[in-house]
Amino acid sequence: QVQLVESGGGLVQAGGSLRLSCAASGRSLTNYAKAWFRQSPGKGREFVAAISRIGTNTDYAASVKGRFTISQDNAKNTMYLQMISLKPEDTAVYYCAAATGADYFEIKYDQGQYDSWGQGTQVTVSS
Image (tube, rainbow, N blue to C red; front, side, top):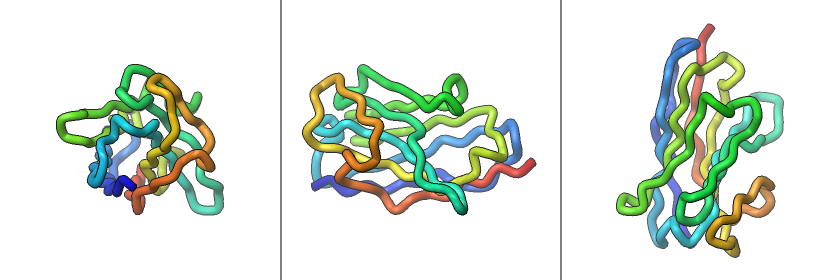
C-alpha cells in the first residue's frame, strides 16, 4: 500500500498561483493511476485532474482545464498540481489519490476506483 502526503496549500488572491505536491512512500507511484480531487464546504468530492501510471496521459475537469497542470516526478516519487489563474470557486480541500489495477495509459475518473488517499490540503482563494 502506498502512503500519500499532500502539501503546498494556502491562502492566495484571485488570479494567483499555487503548486500542490503529493509525496508517496511505500511503493512507486508508477504502479498507480493517480488523481487530484477536491471538496468544498457543503459539496461532494469532485474530480479535478488525473494522470496515468507513468505520466504519459492526463485529463482535467472542464472547470480547471487550461489553468491546472498535473505532473509527476518519478525520481522523487511525487505528484504535483500546478494551479494558475486561481478563482474563488477553486477554494476547497484538495486530495491526491492512487488507484491499483490500472493499465499503463489508463485514466480513472471515479473516486470509488481509488484505493489510497492523502489527508488533504486546504486551498483558499480570496476575491
